[in-house]
Figure 1 (cartoon, rainbow, N blue to C red):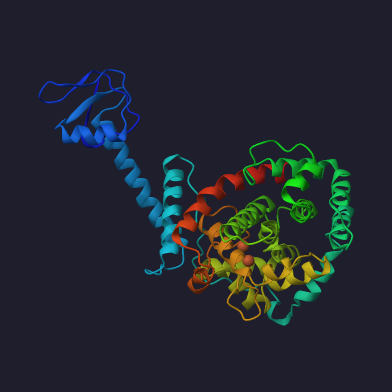
Figure 2 (figure 1 turned 90 degrees about the vertical axis):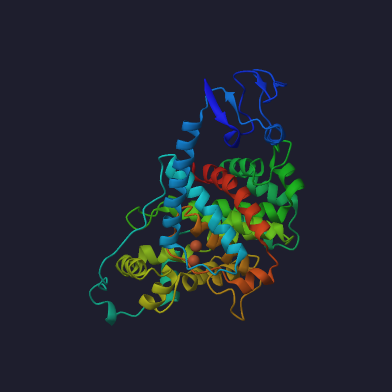
Length: 412
Ligand SMILES: [Fe+2]
Ligand SMILES: [Fe+2]
């Protein structure tokens, strides 16, 4: 019943009637599915349209108008929280275009992304704020007792740092904790690895991904358990971990794209990069509320307003935590410099976490509190030799992995 003009024909549409060329020649029969190359030929043969099942021009035009409208809304949405665009940065432009498409889909599916918070007047500091002094060291040190790590964490760490550690000893430690072993197996069987055949045991997983990689995963799973009971009035932990997992997945994919060794380190670093913020939220909730409000009012990244409120930001607190917990493999440094990868002391690999954090913030996958974020450092992107295609691939692959890992990690 639907007449569709040739410009609106799309691959996959099914003919409702036989199709003939203007000279009467039979072209395709009723029930045939269109393909892109047929449609190209229709134009050459002077065919102006076809009768297609369940489609007609008016409906298609309506759909296109809706898509255009959703794209317009998504563009304004992105403009309201993205850093100003650098017109010469092709990678940032690719990320922006990807986000606009994703947000347009969200708007048109009736599940729009979260609103961008607004604050109309300059927030006031909490009472007595200026007479207090803050120490990142004292804050983290005092909290360490509150967030005590499970025994399994130290056992894994012991095994990793032992010069005679073997795959068998790691398999034994992990295998003694059935919950941990089950989550690790789900992880190695997910799209995070994309192995064609199921891996059914920890020793098999170690044989395939290596004992260091498996240890990083085990540390990641057991670290997340430590923060399970943070009260929701301080911080929405689900949203926090969603942001952290997104940063971990993107860091790992970026490192993988550039053939860096031991990508699980990058996953762990992404997972832990904003950990210091949990201490700031729980230890100094009034100051953190002030820092958050300031960042919204000024449309500035939260780490910048943290520095003004405390004299340091969450990376300084996270650094102490990670030193105290003896998180191995230079992970602490990858986290410490994720907001300052250009610093002289920063290891080059911190740049992956920096870029991954940018991607997680741009797509608004969870949040560790900040709505606004800084521009991606172009010099750093160029130094890592990442191009537009790398970003497009990492974004496309990352979304599914993030969803799967959220399910694996956040079920109790
Ligand atoms: Fe951060
Ligand atoms: Fe972050």
